[in-house]
Length: 196
Image 1: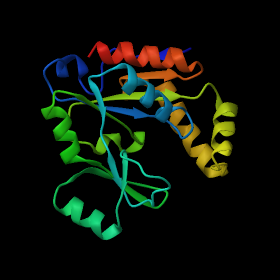
Image 2: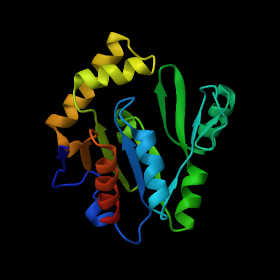
Image 3: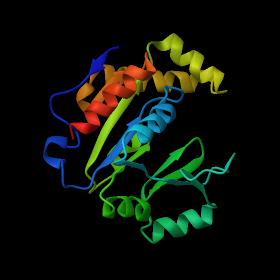
């Protein structure tokens, strides 16, 4: 497993720690294992709590982590300041729930969510830490995207460009690891989170 850990943390994690409100963003291309690793981290670390995301994408199943709302409801949410940093992905809108985030902090929990890396800079005035999961190689990324029905060449190239960006510039994130061994990736993420 390859580990990229820059010395200067983007979220100033060395200054954030201990008694400060914290948001961990688990990022990486589609199919890299964000959801699986997130669920495993939530099971082993009682201080972690997932923050739901509002979305205009229709819900495929009942989910407490992705709350489907209409475009009008999304407009109202953002106008009222209830969403944190809107992002648009494949025609759908997403935003972290501010009220849920603040509730996690009031209960002295560490908030965590999966997020799209290119929108992480839009999250302002929040102590954030970015963990980026990389696929083992481009062939594996293509396989994972195609198995999810996302085999379009432009999407593959876009995701691979982002992976290459992180490999060449690990200082853009707080921790970047190649997810070629699920259990080891979870262990590394857990140790990193416990160091915060």
